[in-house]
Amino acid sequence: DAGVIQSPRHEVTEMGQEVTLRCKPISGHDYLFWYRQTMMRGLELLIYFNNNVPIDDSGMPEDRFSAKMPNASFSTLKIQPSEPRDSAVYFCASSLSGGTTDTQYFGPGTRLTVL
Amino acid sequence: QKEVEQNSGPLSVPEGAIASLNCTYSDRGSQSFFWYRQYSGKSPELIMFIYSNGDKEDGRFTAQLNKASQYVSLLIRDSQPSDSATYLCAVGNSGGGADGLTFGKGTHLIIQP
Image (cartoon, rainbow over all chains, first blue to last red):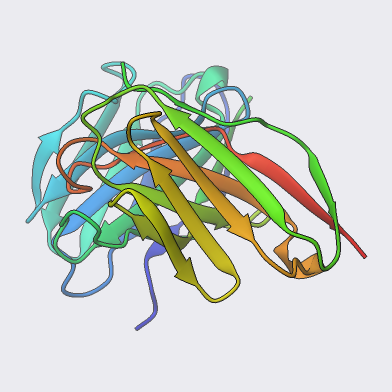
């Protein structure tokens, strides 16, 4: 399996622009997670899906952030409008069943820079 | 707000010695605990998990859990330069890991040849 796939790997944009990050989970995995990592705050959970349904979006920082999962093999995280403080590495992760000790497999991440 | 605390380091350990990484967590109801390794510029990868009090060994790695003290540790025996990385402690957010993980900010480990 190719693992979790994210695109783009790097994104540089200007403040106010819309940014869309994409994720393809591992085939057969029922859970998909979006995380954000910064030096100041570390790795934070933004939102997660189970069987394409958003379960908990309490980590989404503001209404500027939105996430969708239209099917089992694709998810997007959108920021509109983007701000410099959104600069971070965004990781997507998936797991098979979300059980107590089920492994979350992380994608390579998207490094976002907002100027 | 659940919190996971780690010493940011850097923790410097000579090659061949035992590296000891520590983590404390705030939610007494937490039941699952994970150690991830993250190389610079890479994504986190799971090393091991533990959910019962005591020790769990996997090769050169030993995870230790003390729920009464809300304390998790990771020991790396016969440490190698390739073990140099940031180690992230993570705690399951409910009875399991189904609803994502709360991560510490990580400890930067340096193994000196």
